[in-house]
Each structure stands twice: as structure tokens, then as C-alpha cells.
Image 1 (cartoon, one colour):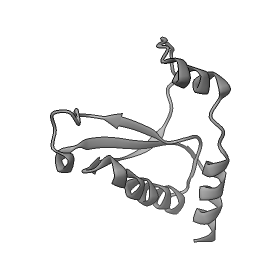
Image 2 (cartoon, rainbow, N blue to C red):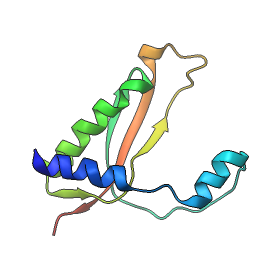
Image 3 (cartoon, rainbow, N blue to C red):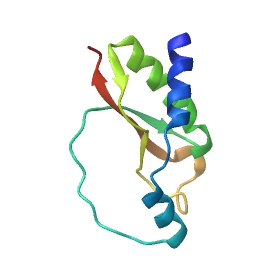
Image 4 (tube, rainbow, N blue to C red):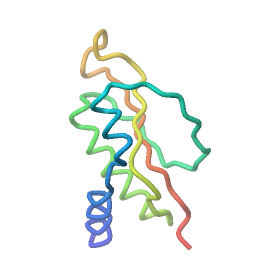
Length: 101
């Protein structure tokens, strides 16, 4: 459990790059290429406010299965909250991972 707490502290310490903060303020839209990566993922059904519970389960799984978290979490929203009831929302939650050495 201590390892999980240490990981939580490391994730809290991840700073959002200044460029992204500027974009968030300006509303600017850009195109970028992303590098392929290995991710642990789980599907969360329901409120966005409870997706953190899914991330907790994933972090536990990552640690128990010989991986380390290699970056900040990623969410993919598979339906639209404007037309989908909250209890039916589907979110793909991901963590970039690397095999523990």
C-alpha cells in the first residue's frame, strides 16, 4: 500500500506544461502527432465524477502486474454527455505504462 501512496504523490507532482496552460486559457486548437505507447486501460461506466475510482483500480493492477506508471492518465470519452444519461456514459481510462525492470 505504501507503493500506491508514493505513486499518488508522484502523480500529484506532475506539472502541466506551460504551453498547455496557455492553450487552456486561450481556447486555441492545434494539431499534433503522438508517439505510440503501451497503456493499461479500463472501461468506466457512469459519472465522470467517479472515474477516479477506476484509476485507483488500474494503478493497483499496474503495480501488481509488474508495470510502472510512465505518464499522466488519459481519458477517451466514447459518448456525449449532452445526449447520454449519466449512468450510461462510457469512458476509457488509460495510464501509459512500462514493464518494471
